[in-house]
Figure (cartoon, rainbow, N blue to C red):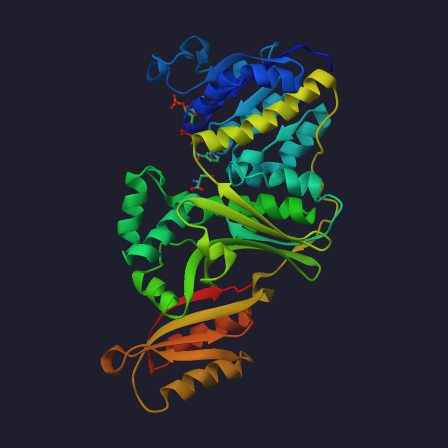
Length: 428
Ligand code: NDP
Ligand code: HSE
């Protein structure tokens, strides 16, 4: 290993991200050679349908046989930008086992199989980079892995999904419904044809798992992350939030809870003067709080071909430098091995929205349910009267377990027509 002057690259995928990686590699090639101390040479590009790419300037490099491309002797680094889990897992494992370094933007793959991939990279003594997997262009994996390696991270919290941020921001600024703004996000190309991974929070949960793993030196997978999406957020929820001086964001929140790690993704009310409230459109922003460093904020483009390709290229330069000069990037560190917190032990504040019968004593009986569970109320607000009476309760900090018990009781009360929504609330 080391002292190569040409580094062979296989690019798996030529879609939104892969085509931009290829374009930028061509455009920046001279700079990249200087920065690496050796030349990047593209040995092949794997796609699923050659016909689709027959007019591409890279058509002569294309193949549908990704596995053979990976296994070519002259390929040193594999860039995986296909997406999905099972097939890319096979490809990435094969590449690592064959001694090729891997750069991937695939958060679903990393969040589901990081342990297996890290082990394969360690065994082969090669690099596994995935900066683009979380918040695309925003450098947050590198800072967690390297810059904060000497500190103790307390929490990581932020907006890590551009599609849902676009939808919530558009609902907030226009008053429109979720369905209308999802349609708009699709029309503008933010949301995919099947938007489930984004709107139901799976994409953000994968990113939360990756962030929590790095922040707390503990293996956290997507299945360990509590997840709620935004598809049930209504224009009425947004309006009620506005009336109370709040806005709703889909947040990923990773924190130490005693000797455990909690990672969750859910719609969250935040005050309109909270720094995350002004993160609009499809932008992402992540706060990292560490004991010595204090609070750090990362903000920028969390999606899109060129921004994601920027992060992929940064990783590619790192992996190529190691191929040329020798050495290896820092690998996984999961020595702390903390337990995953029971979600019931997580404590936050809640905004509970109910339709109620507008009768004498209703408010007292509802308040009693909260106080019986030891939950203190911050505000109680009635929004309308008579047939349409609507009660909005905001609690002080309470445990998930206790709040869930109260909600069940509220649902069975004659005085409560319906519990419309329960939205968690974070403040600075
Ligand atoms: P696209 O769907 O745009 O592109 C996927 C590419 O993979 C296509 O070129 C497709 O080929 C190719 N492909 C699919 N199946 C195979 C196969 N069996 N063999 C070989 N090639 C195959 O995806 P994106 O570029 O948007 O995303 C790629 C990855 O980057 C995903 O993991 C995604 O999560 C991640 N990412 C994406 C971001 C974004 O903004 N788009 C941001 C951050 C991360 P063909 O062209 O022939 O169909
Ligand atoms: N679908 C993702 C988003 C792309 O909307 O943020 C970046 O991972």
